[in-house]
Every structure is written in C-alpha cells, then in structure tokens.
Length: 483
Image (cartoon, rainbow, N blue to C red; front, top):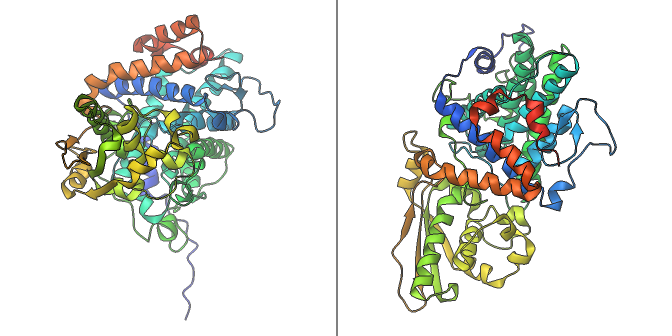
C-alpha cells in the first residue's frame, strides 16, 4: 500500500539557517582576519591582472551581447568593461581563477575561497555607483573585506568535513552557496529573502568535476568559479524580487540535495562560523600550480640548485620519487598525454619536471611551446608517487594542516641526493611573515603587466595602506584599475 505524500511545508533546514544567521548577525572582530583579507584582496586582483595576458581568457570577457552599455555598471579590473553585476561577476571570477594562482583551502573538500570576490566586488561596485548617482553614500572597501571573510568562512567551514569530490561534484558549488549568502546580505535582503536565496543555490544544478580530471581536463576549470559566483548574484537578485525559496532543499526525502547528490548523508561540521578560514587561508605566492603540489615544486627548486652545484643536469636523473599525501595522488598524479595547460597544471609530474629542468615554474610553462620539450615527458616517465599515511594525517589535522611533499633523486651513476622534505608551503599561515613580502612583490609585478608607472603608483599608495583602503568607496577604488 503506497504511503501518502505529506504536503506540510517544513521549516528551513538548520544548515541554511546557520549560514544566513552568520551573514546577518556575526560581527567579525579578528584583526588577523582583516589583515589577511587585505592581502588576499591584493593577491586576488593581481591574479586577475596576470590572466589578462592570456587570449584564451580574454576572449570570454565583456558583455554577453557586444556593445551593451550598462549605466552605473560594475567595473572589471584591468579592462574598460562596465557590466551588469551578473556578467561582471563572471568576468572578475574568470580572471581571478584562470591561472590557478589565487588562494586555496584544503580539507575534506578543497577550493579557492577568493573565487567569491567575483560576485562580492561586482555587486559592491554596482551598488556603490547607483548609490552615488542617487546622492547616497557608496559601499567601502572595508565592507568588501568583511564580505570576503564571511564568504571564505562559509565555503571553508563546510569544506572541512564534507568531500563533494567524493560524489563527483565540483567545489565551485560552495562558491555559489557562499557568494549567494554574502551578496544577498550586501543587497540588503531581509532574513526570509536570504533564506530563500541560499535555498535556491542548493537546489540549483551543480557542476560535475568532469572538466578537472583526465581524460576530460579542460579550460572550464578556469572559468567554473566565475560561472558559480555570477550565478550566485543572479539567484540573490531573483530572491530580492520576492521569488520563493525551498526550506528543505537539503533534507527533503528523495528530492533533496542529501538524497540526490550526497549519498543520503548530512553535512558534518567541525566548528561554528567565525573567522577561522580567512585567518588560515593558503596563498599561492611562488608558483601557479595546483596547491597539493606547491611543496613538491619548492622541493624541486631546491634540488635544481643542488644539481647545479654538483654539476648535474636533468639528463643525469634515473628516477624521481615523490612521497606525498592521499589527496595529491587522487587529484594530480597523472600519466600519459597532457592535452592543454589546464591538464598540465594539474599533473604533479609535470610541475616537478619543469623546475628540475629549468629552475622555475611560471604560468607560461604550461603553454604548448614549453610542453613540447621532450625532456619534460622523459622526466615525467621517471617519476613515481606514493602515499605517506603520516602526511595524509597531518594534512587533515586542524592543528597542522600541512601539505607535505618529499622528493628523492637517484642518478644514472647510482648516486642520489638526500630526500628534500617541505611540509608547509610559503603561502601557509605558519609562514606568513616570510610570505607577505613576496605576496606584495607578486602584486606589484602583476600591476606592472597592465598599467603605466604613474597608475601603478596610485594603486599601490592606496592598496598597501589598509586603513586608507578600508575607508575608500568601492567605485573609486575600482576606477583606479581602468585601463
């Protein structure tokens, strides 16, 4: 005998309520979080400026319909585009993520919380320009930093214990959820409206990880976060019109997210929302490489210097052994042909071979003209990875959160170098004092890619003074980045 379907509308799922209450009510009083968010903003914008060097990225930018003019639209840094907030969010999000060089969060799920800046910055700028046009005060960059901290926290805290990759879903799902909540708050939505918006994000179609893994690795992984943060803006704007929400979007039997997409399991949480994620976020400072390989690349650079001192070259190498953690093997341990830059920057063998050969790893090293060097594939074929369970445990330990790799080189003459171990990359919170000067140098270099000297100086004068930056209207700050 069939069971009648209940039509009783449930209250909003607790997981959704917690997100909304955090966005609306939590007061951030962590100076460490704000200081880190300040540098995160600069680094993220710089990554976007570097991406503008690549035609494959630039061809995706601009309005959907060429020639569209949006009065008081949001600026796209490093361009002349001024767009509606949804398309501006896509543009900003795409350039931020294109080169895989912005910040990273590693846990049960991994991701790049600064991807949320696409939606946050687009909406903040759009709101500010319209406010000024109406004689009202604009938003400040301090409010943007607050939005960044909260988006980082939502994405990162959910990721701590919940592996979306295990069920084939891409981490940009969390960008969409976090951006939706924060952007809805910036838009001034009511509590009920933000609840509706976040529920819309959960019932929305979610991206598969297909484009991140062989044999389908491709450039969508470079614009997927832009797509997610722009979709978040769209959903928040729909909720602002009064569009209804779906209270049991996660828990509805049979049709909710948990049953459809998460093997019927509920999310687990390690900690309440606060400022933990921004305080501990990982910066990619030295190398544009998938983060699980950052310490391996650093070790390879050390080994390159040792080879030079010993009079050896890559041709003398017989075997490369990488001792690593489970996530690294699952994501970037690749053999066989690599079809494009998106494939190469997710192959640890490639990312180790280049510095062993050339003593460097830059975004340009993933392009075809470098990848065609037969010595790279020759080294890849000599490289093997194996998991060290201790490295895996320390990767998940909330007190350590290491991303360790260790490399051993054996040479054709039977000699070998001592294993080089790097537990924490230079962008780790444990190496902040060492990393921040290099992060500023990276930002300065990226400004020089797009702007003349006087414009670079104007941007730097404001950007490096956190107090001055926080007080600056969003629209005025983004006007500094018009090319």
